[in-house]
Length: 306
Image 1 (cartoon, rainbow, N blue to C red):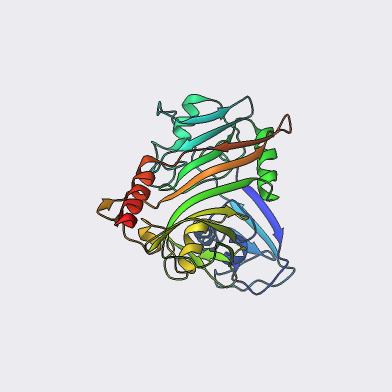
Image 2 (image 1 turned 135 degrees about the vertical axis):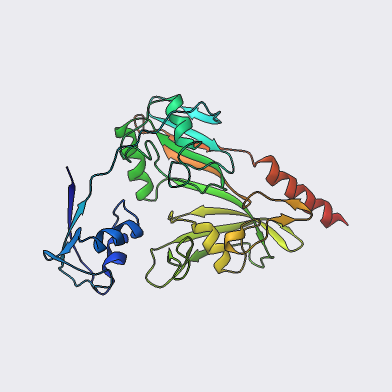
């Protein structure tokens, strides 16, 4: 039976699809736009076009159509499990692995591997069970995964309250004069390329703190702390300040450096600090840089000696 979601618009002026996409719903803007076109989104009990500008106080009712259930198959894929207890797992995801099934990636994902290993929470539905937060396919590093709904709710609440600490290492193009700084710039869908994100007026708040760890000729190794967790946030913010992440072809850097072929951006989720949902213990996890990342750093150090 179709599910109905109702909400009231607090701030007017945006297109209906944009307003709903920024309202914290679990559906993508493209999905919402298709539902608006099909008449499944009513404003004040009337169908509207995607170009409709919402007004404060508008009553919106969304009828979510029934979807055909697709069972995700557990797959015996090796996992690098850093920690596990009855509530959660901390996994070191390898570069190139998609986190959960989506169009074009029905199998071979982290979720397929996790389902083979352990039961997961049901909070995020059948396609993202247990997934509290995500990292991009070509970003490596630590992810927390919930094994039951109670743990998932606790971990998600901590993440939303900005109490979870997440630290990334990134090699970026260019040299920094400052030793540390903050990028505070809103991130949203790219106005021309729907597959990309960008710093845009009216985007969602996004704050990234950075610290210089090591300087090379033409490149800098950074330690970055996420205050918010927008899609592609670090990659977009680094491009925005003129220092794209090395290997990130999407946001402005070639996938080759010093003769070394790169398989994606040199961005690694290195450290994760969270609160254990049952005991309340503060837990810190750390992961080594991938060998491919270390290889590039070694090459830069050797070049610097010349």
